[in-house]
Amino acid sequence: MCDLLGISQPGVVAKRRLDPEDRRHVFQTELSKVTSNHVSFPNRGMLCVNETGIYDLIGASRKPAARAFRKWVNGTVLPAIRKDGGYVRGEENFETEEDIMALSLRAMEMPRKKRQERKKKHQLGSMPRMVTASHRRRADPRTVVPTVVPAAPVDRDSRPLLPSPC
Image (cartoon, rainbow, N blue to C red; front, side, top):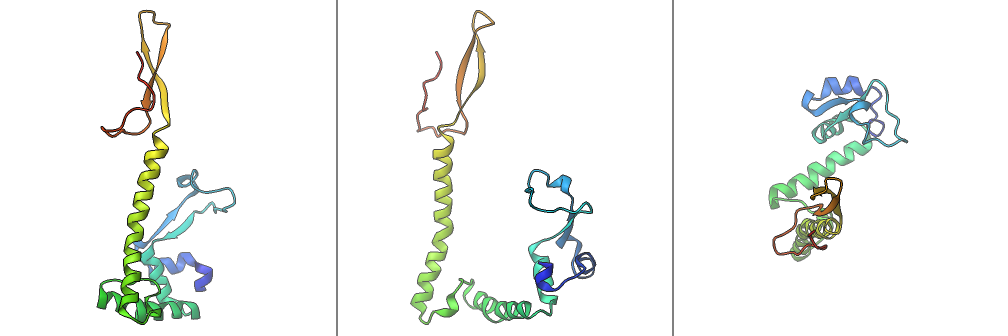
């Protein structure tokens, strides 16, 4: 991001321009399980900036691409939000109110569909996985009887996939 905005000293610029809550140094020990092997991570840590900080940096940049972005946000997105209460990507390319309304309805429908897909995927994906690590002791303490336990909570209406132990 700093390269795109023409920032050669990100630490200095971040301290001068950004509020402390908009920036944070992150060290490799904090992200050891998250970072992949092909990402270089300096020993001194990496400066991370939240979304508000990114917009502040874009607002301060003199690069032509940053200026074009600011003009688009200030000239198209913010007026649409002020007038209509929201902005739908690409709405400036439509001519009729019906086109904009259809696009808005499709955009509003997408998060609902994604939630339904995630819910369905979770239900189908987690139900067959079973945990058989629980043990019950019988009369002979050396006898172990595996117990089947669903890996995820099961609805009251659904039936277990495997029979429960005797």
